[in-house]
Image (tube, helix red, strand yellow):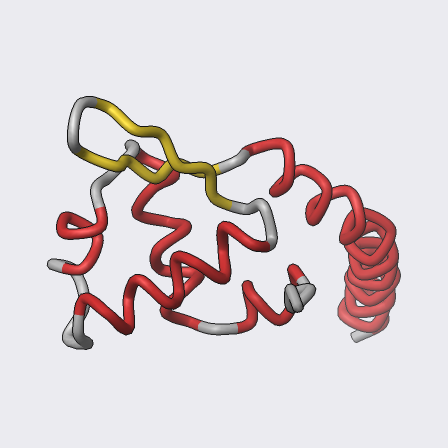
Length: 107
């Protein structure tokens, strides 16, 4: 039975976020990714597998090497989901800035 992974649980883990940051710059092999972490290659491979299951990472076979790269479309889905919250926060910050400016001008 296949476990369905939640994309937000996947990106909640700091190691997985670090992996995404690494491969956002360039596709990397599992060994190259693992070199950036103190944990075992097997532990890093488990993190990569979760990212693959969530479709945040794609794998490509080049010769005998597997390269992992970021799936920007899936990241866009996350960004699109967050957008209404960003707009809400920015609106609140603008109101706070306006209030603070008004208080400062009254002094």
